[in-house]
Length: 137
Image 1 (tube, rainbow, N blue to C red):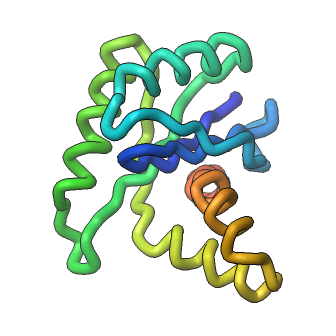
Image 2 (cartoon, one colour; image 1 turned 90 degrees about the vertical axis):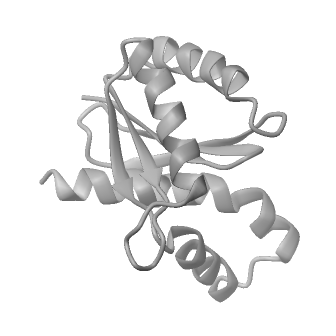
């Protein structure tokens, strides 16, 4: 089973993909789109799903530290609904602090600020997808 991992932001979406066995997540890219242009992103994801034979999508659900859902969670839920309306199976995983965790790793690897900015969304998508894959074992 092949999974697509998404870390959705207002203007970017980090994208990761699993291997065919659904065991290892690998970063693909950070897709950029006009602010909150989810239709553009949907069209792009549909192409990826078809070209890469994706079975399911895993998206990070940003929760507040107290576990409640905020504005960004509603944004993610609206995109989840758009994907499901296209017949895709979407799994949500709590993504609290994934970006912070990825940033810490990149800083400890002595990565420049410019490179961190380019890579953070893609690596957050990898972390989200790998967390999901690990939870399925």
